[in-house]
Image (cartoon, rainbow, N blue to C red; front, top):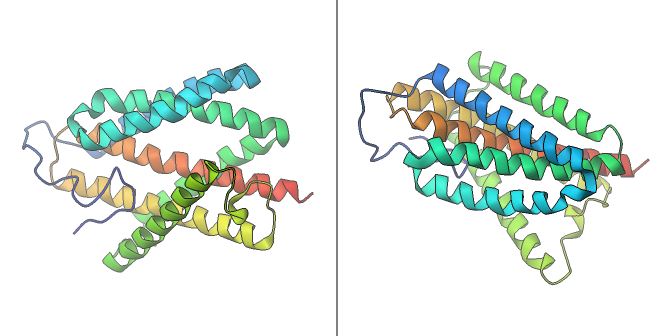
Length: 242
């Protein structure tokens, strides 16, 4: 039984899919993932260049990305259209938020980008070489931890509507506990990449329809965006201690 904490790539994704002679391949998924990343980088570069003037586009990216993600998750067959749109929206958001952090802490964005890329490549190597094996207990542990993190973040979002928040989640909180929590979240986000790799491989082996290449690439991008944001938050906390 497949299990992944990524809401876009869960154990039910391949159930009740129509059979097709044109099936999902590993190479096709890699190409789609690269294309989505290029789209994200293009729109991120645009809002990055706007600086403070790009905050409206950043907000558009947040809400547009959320809505598009929901549509993609519930309408997998639309992923060839919605996945690139999601990547574009996320780029607007990431470019804007990265610009804000860069003004506060010069050099932080390049550090976050390289760390995200490094973690991705390291986990891909660990998965391909079977250093890390996604056993059922491993999947269950990552799933439970991710669900717990999501619950805490939802509570924090609810509190923000009343002008409050959970202290250890605040960017300006550089206490050892807050930093430790950020490191834990980054580890869980990184381990989700292993589950995503396993999910994609399972899709190829089960001869999923071709459009699942787009859907799987979308799910992988969801995890990478989460990982980058968490790394950015951790680096901001560390920089605030100086």
